[in-house]
Length: 187
Image 1: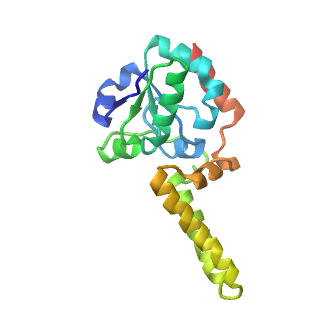
Image 2: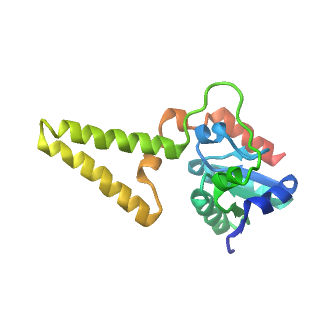
């Protein structure tokens, strides 16, 4: 089953007929998501398969993330399970760049977007390695390791640091939130 994609303008025109699944972390989702989107973090996708199968039987699924990488991964995993879904080309970044509206979760202050968390963590580790390297030259290997990780990330279009940061408590879905989302999709 080939993965299809929709541009932000195509998705906006069809938003009323799509079931939108945002596979970013809950913190990223809270900071701004497509109107009506449901949050099912990529790490929870397997647990959500029955609900997604039900939702796909009722209409088209659109899978969304920040750039389109995680959503493409999710679409491939869904296709392996016989569930057709499209990915949003360019993700929420392209969506907002074209001026389409987003919703923000009400309440507590949302964590930073994952890209911003990665930049902070990488910068902090590099700076720590350089400063600590003034006393112990071996500490500079920390900076070198982060630099190598960033190069690997760019070459493979993956991000190990984002995967690690996604495990932090503020980036995790509350079990009750995920259960409510899955119940909504199966109604």
